Image (cartoon, rainbow, N blue to C red; front, side, top):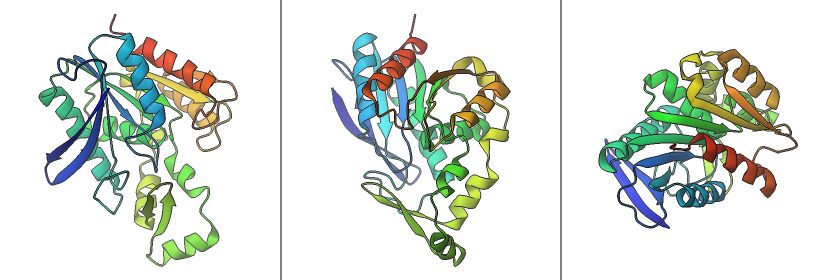
Length: 253
């Protein structure tokens, strides 16, 4: 089952969705789930994961929200600092307003990059355990790999280009420079290593497996490689395997 709700704090209005089994009350274990660039809180992969984990473990819920400029969010300029604030406010809401004893984090692609920046810049790990599926660790490289020469000309003139799927998102040179400066692959996350699991496909063209391997080795983080899986894990069998591993890692027992 699912329920929509908004968090209106500090000048932001964050559109959220809660997944649960029988009742939205007394959820003691809540997973904060985030998705990749251009997606939204109605993400089908998160919905599938939520259905599995809320029926498998009693007292589990899953919360997803629209990033700034994504889905039904009202903002029109994508700023990473605001993404970090969204994550902070939703995490605080889960713990303080929803009363969860334990908060987990399951993030993919762009969402994984934001979570890594959140851990590093906020210095706050409110998450009992974290799973990254196909993390865009070198997000600058992923975002710029498909930018044409004409697009660079537009960006260098101080104008914006559009990226995304159902909703087009304005990308500025300032935004890309922010990603270039904040290269999470160069940061140390060893203090969080025991609480993190990474799952990555060997055929990922958006976020190469080689980057994930190097990052996991440098930070002593467990990496599960899924042979032939692409970036979105479009093969249902590979997605089922990933969900199984996430459930096991998030087991309350």
